[in-house]
Image 1: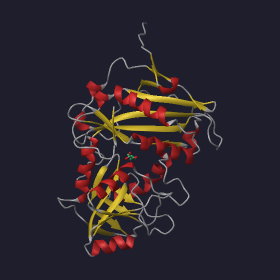
Image 2 (image 1 turned 30 degrees about the vertical axis):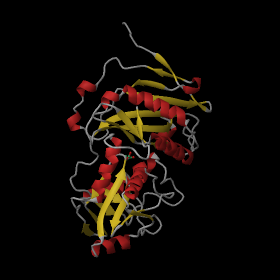
Image 3 (image 1 turned 90 degrees about the horizontal axis):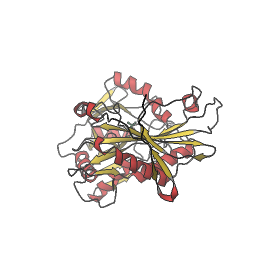
Image 4 (image 1 turned 90 degrees about the vertical axis):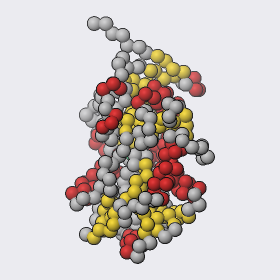
Length: 365
Ligand code: COI
């Protein structure tokens, strides 16, 4: 049998090296980009870096493939795992851009700290990411709405079932071409009055894998009732609106745009802070404050509630057409001149290089 596996060594900054083992044949030709199911098709390569003996080793970019994992790997038992999400976009000249990747590595390390996972060097992350996306640029489809969703994640790989922080980890970056997150034309959400996503002092602000698993069952129940997602409220009283699990939330009431302040139970969304900035750029008054369910219902009843929308990397900016609370449904609708859609256009115009980038968010690959 003849093996013809190429191996390159790439010199990074600080005399660090990275290995590159490219695929022999791309899967690109087999992908139906018109019918993508969010997050279920993966590009040709992935970035991998192992942590052992108190340090991160030499990273590699290798063909996307299943991992070999010991059944006792700590993440499988105790959920010591975190992730990130960002996207790469292509403009009409074929140039590829990432959106605020520096924010993702900062948040990854914030999540790592909370989950007792070792910090990953920022520069190494950004250089490795850049090389990976450069290699996968043909996977970034042009056209607004199309992008390559980039999923960095870290998990405890040490083969050991002791309930304590692991001594071995893997950081990977995988990529999946996507179009939209929801296929529903109208999104309806249920306001939580029983289950909770995150408690004070918990891991809600981190992108901890378990934060998402804990939402699946209540979300399934809400879906059975015809909603797509849950609006989480504070765990102690269920009176204050927090986030929706895969997105932060905005409420356009009167002439103010209201969003909950980030806290130890709310994720510091990159899209959230970008939307706040873009709204301010348009002269819209943004109030970062707690909003009670009672105030929201009052605004819906007295018709001062103009819009609700979510923001997140996967969903971008997503109008919410109605919500349910304790068995009663409230319809909002979305006006054709919705602020949500204006802000979405402002955001995607920057992401797809259709306009200037006054805040320096775009990073060319
Ligand atoms: C993202 O928007 O990147 C998220 O983390 C949502 C994901 C759970 C699909």
